[in-house]
Length: 446
Image (tube, rainbow, N blue to C red; front, top):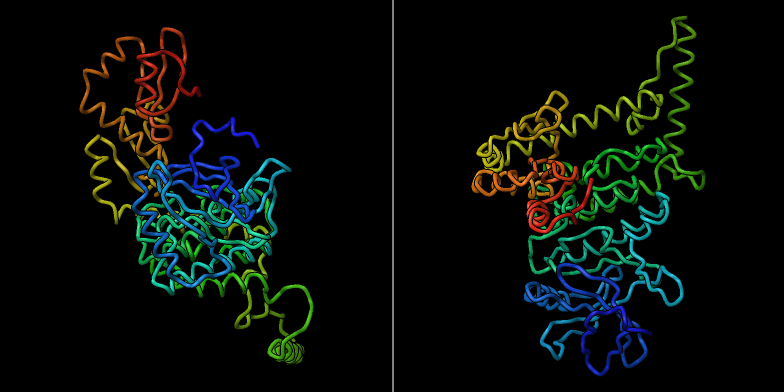
């Protein structure tokens, strides 16, 4: 197979044959290789600054018993150039012949709508792998759709870079206040459930999809709302508790007919008996029939109309936003204080959302609505970088403006600029602006 697409093909040990690069990221690059027995494997070459952490994670991982929902690590070592590498199970090929595409949950979500039973089955299996780690005193730390792969059709957790206790993770999949490593993993599993079912990004949580089955919504919303609650005390206490909820949602009490358990027969008999007694009672009294009571264990949403369910969803969403926003303000006085130092205020609006006010923001009267994940997001960091630049380097800012480039901080993009010399407009980071100022067009246009 051609290696022309590789810039600098790595020199591998003699027992491994290189095919192609299949992925890359901040922590390193992955390659498709074949070992001396003819087994196809994934090989990861770790970037320098991540080497110590990943080496320790792999060392710890290989000491614990294996589990069918955890991708297996086969070998590790140093390349001739000194870089650390390890080989692991290769994900199934979701691409065509000669065009390898790793079969991951992220890929499946991108290319087709996943049925709810399939999502619940995948998440329950992966959660069992996370539970196995927790029993060994470890946690994964970076569970997300991209790190759930399929080997021979079975879902497995991969990428163990944070097993040694690293604090990094993926924005939207890490709670603000993790009570433990297990709590962090359960939160990420809940967010993965939300993204897989809704087809939305983690930043949209907890908005449902534009169209959905109300029955499915009722079955999954209580799981992801609890798993991703802003308050740690309200989240699942363990992976086993989350697995139980996933399994219950996979086989709800109102599922398709089949064998009825004895308890269900007893409940049905009691319900019929109560209905008969109620009929005789009201017939004798000749009083208008009232709405039947909600029996213990019954679903309180089952009797709601679609309009009432929609109103309930709106109230829940509003309450979640209000709680989440208020919790963020309470727990992050330093961040609020930093923004105040730049002349920016963050308060709750009447709908429970975080409202950012910045006199230098030239749109919407200086008001921008943000969520609790904004501060740590890429655009939040870029925005603060621009505010810091304006405060600490006003002379340089004036030189940029003197050259005909007007710009202002934008909480949604980092900054916006307009070049009065040619009418070009753009958004991006401070580095993008400086690059445009020095070298001309080339930044992302809006």
